Amino acid sequence: MSLGILSLFVRFETREISPEDLDLLDREGGRGLIDVGSREMPRMHARLLSLLMMLVFLMACSTFLHWSGAGLMVFVLAHAAVTVVIDCLRRRRAADWIAYSETRAQRIERLLNVALSVERARQVRQHRTHPEPERMFRIAALATIVGLPLLWLLLSANGWISREIVFANAYLPLALLLMVIGRLVQGLLEIKFTTSARVGVNLLELESDDTLQIYLLVLLLGVALLPLGVRALVAVPIMVVSVRLLACGFELIWLRRSVKVLSQRVRRLHRATGGMLPGITPFAAADAPPLISPDADAFEPADLFGPPTDDEHENHERIAP
Image (tube, rainbow, N blue to C red; front, side, top):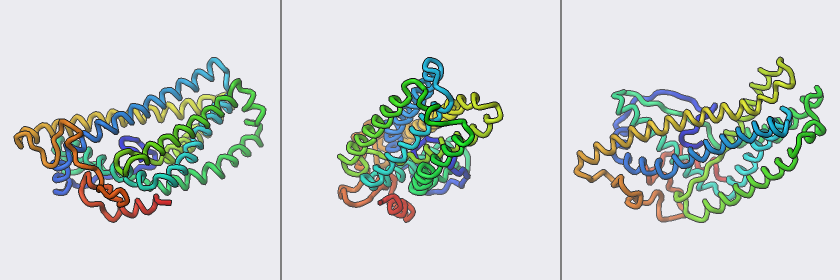
């Protein structure tokens, strides 16, 4: 789960704003503002750019290389399947970093939702219940290992796809090879970079929920467009990426609006306290205290927002291999 990422599997609900929420907002608002600005905003921009590049690539291959719907579909599904492989490597080599990153994202999301509601004089706040990352990984792995071969057999039995049809697309095998190698190398380097520092310094999250979203969108759009003929399936991969791009853009707008509201409250509190905020000065990230315990072997994900809850320790245990 990434902060600001809209998931098809997130459950939305409203909760009353408690005194604990207000204390969290005043105590950790400045530090959370720095963290979102220095970490989450660049990650969201990079994600948006990645989806945009994927959309342009698919449209260019369809237009200039005349890739068929089957070829585009294979590329998108292969791209999603590689994510599961990378998540498997992440779980084995960086379980503690993943547990910290997931907990931190949930707590900052809570902080931003509280800030939005308080500034709008509301008594309730939005709460997002995200699916367990370990459960999403297992479902995605099962769908990749079992579901994709079954889908291939079903489509090939009806003559809609075959090895000859797929590899008749110009440069598709080369594009698949380069994509797989490039993503695996990038994933390994990301894991090495993250684990080179203690827990809490660098962030790393599982992305298998993205894979499940792609599988589900491909299934729904494929069934919806199938009556229009096999040629209409060329639009399915492009529509899948477009939907995810729009969702990412929507979440970026929400994140920007939330950060703006939180920034206004932090500035008011800064003036009201004579330039002394509880716990942090919001003008330099270097003023922030460590996000984790100095003991690198201990899982202390919540130094940013107080003592960890039982649910957070259970989340860590679920992710640990």
